[in-house]
Amino acid sequence: MADIRVLSPEVYNLIAAGEVIERPYGAMKELVENSIDSGADRITIEIANGGFDLISVTDNGCGIAEKDVELAFVKHATSKLSAQSDLDAIQTLGFRGEALPSIAAISNVRMTTRVSASETGVCVNVEGGEVKDKTYVSANVGTKVEVRNLFANTPARKKFLKTPASESAEITKFVSKLILTNPNLSITYIADDKTVYSSNGNGREQAIFAVYGAECLDNCLHIAYSNGEIRIEGYIGNPTFSKPNRNGQTLSVNGRYVTDQSISAAIMQAYKPFLMTRQYPFYVLNLDIPCHLVDVNVHPKKTEVRFADARKVCSLFYHCVENALQTYTEQRSEQIFSEEPQTRPAQYRQEDFADVFDRLAAQNKIEIMNRDQTKDVDEMERAELQADKIDAISELGTRLEREVSVAAARANMGLNGVDYLKQAAPQFNEVVGAESAPSREDMLFYRARILGSAFKTYLILEIDDKLIFVDQHAAHERILFDRFMQNRPSDMQPIMFPYTFSVTDEEALFIEENISNFNKAGIELQRFGTNTFRITAVSSLLSDMEMGDFVKYLLSSIEEFKPDERELAVEKIAQKACKAAVKAGYCLSEYEIKYILKEVCDNKILQCPHGRPITVVFSKTQLEKMFKRIV
Image (tube, rainbow, N blue to C red; front, side):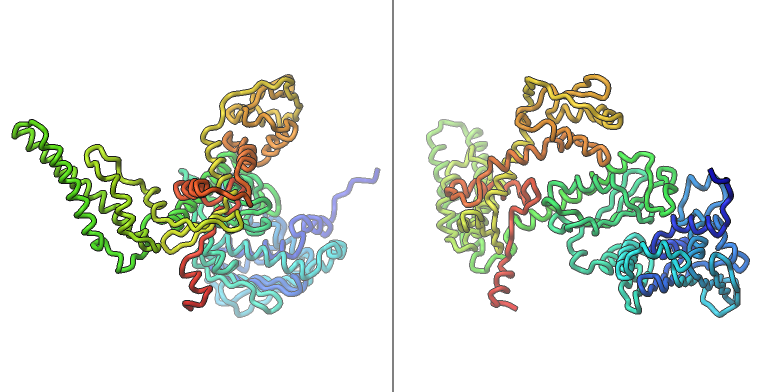
């Protein structure tokens, strides 16, 4: 065995630099974080040749005092920590004192800085980690760091890096995340003399606009959720705005861009009923959490964090996203299935039906009076009865007015409103004990006009100025799915040969913690020895599942999110609903069409259990634009 020796500073600085600065974007990231920590509100980033030739970061922060300029390039020298206790309340992006020394060890660095108390700036050139010269120059308050010839003295590292174009794309991706997680910073990003991003720092909406454009912002939902000392704020994509990968996901903790698989899984679970397979949600979210509840001192790259109560944090993300999606769905449904017509032509005014109203009201009044004449009552009783008649006729008038409105709405769609009212009038012939007025959903459906179906698959409904296409299979599947979820069978069927399986220590703990959820979902689990369990009974709804695959599904959540008993069987229920629903191409009867469309209108459902859309809506204005009737 060779002798043990202490490495020279030149060697261990290069080793340490390789851990902190793996590629050009790492150097840029560290410099920008220093700028943010300096209190800057305006930062300019410039790169050339993927960062290999130049990485320049200029800020208007507090600057560095002349006496500290050379010390800034000494390993573990920092202004952000002074005692061990500071590690428990880290509020800065940088704190290790490794960035500048690591960058200087593998490149040539020029730093120009000035503090407000000084009339001149200081410029130093650093090569191989050593300060070569220092001069006084004219400079604005703040700091500018220029990094050239990155990895020039570590050719072994450089040859394993990607092409300049790939490295430039990686830096561009990070700058986009930087803008999204620091919405109050003005950030300009220039790559090879071309301005790629320019954000003015006017909030998160403007930051999303700067990175993704107006279309993305139009499809986002704002979230602001607070639970005591923890707060979640940002934007998520609506259910129709999804991505084929996770590139549209940005998460920050106290303004620090991080990646966290558990939080990502929690958000994905909230989106599950709304997204199709192999689609991923879009979100830009920030978590504000007290420093003592999060540990950012996990890795030199500082993109990973640990929470004191990770499950609580994941649960908050799940519920706030779920609530936002449900609210959006309800609002979107209201827009599609609006209660009242948006416009009513002048020729169909309510007074046009006044004669019908008067005739029906008078007819009912006469019938009541005729019935009363046969009664032998004294004057007091007759007065009370007369008062009841007046109230009853008043109620009749109110209800007939509602029916007139319905008739007018029908007339708007090309039907004869007066004839429709005459047909509907008999239900009001009995005033005393008459049924209540139509419900809101019934009023909606009365206004609708069923046009039929296209290709034996898409049902067509006209409501007011909207033409609604409904996928009969997806709609019926969702109807059955909701019924299954509301009335899941609770009867348990014993398994003739219980399914036994063994797990690791971690998996055993996971099952023990969630065994009540499994039982509520219809899977009776029992411990059967050390790290061994068996399934002895299942709900009749799950009786045809393959046990081995289902166990794998249960254990797949161990690193993600605490399973919800309601979600454990949801995929199985969705499969049953899909099999039972009418298929595309099946010719429905008039009654079946009305049933499905009535359920869609009543429940305002927009998506099937697998996230596919149920309804597609065209407005009259859209159609007129298509046919060039309006421009």
